[in-house]
Length: 102
Image (cartoon, rainbow, N blue to C red; front, side):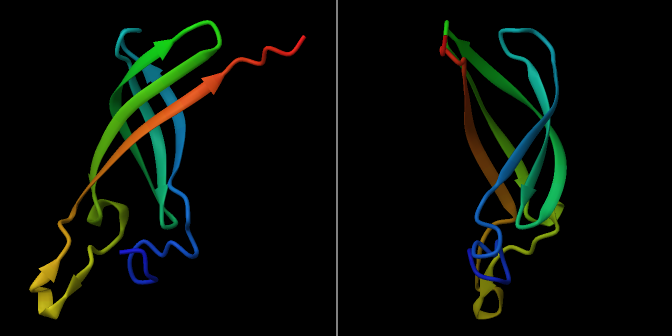
C-alpha cells in the first residue's frame, strides 16, 4: 500500500487536511476541507466534534472516501485474489493552542 504504485509514501509521506469552511451548530459543526493524499486532492464535508478550554481547541472527526474517488487504485495481487477494499477511512484529531507568551 505504501509503494510507488499505491500511496507512494516515499514521495508523499503526509496526508494534508486544509479547512475551507465551518457551518452548523457549535456543538457539532460540519467542516468542509480539502484532503491531499499521494498528490491527489479532493474536497469533503464531514461533521466534527469540538472540545475547547482556555488554551486548547480540539477538533475530531472521520472521513470515509474511496481510493477510486482520490484517483488511486487499491492494492491487489495474485490476479485480484488478494486485494484491499476500495473504501478508505481516515480518523483525525486536530489541536490548536493559544499562545500564552506575554
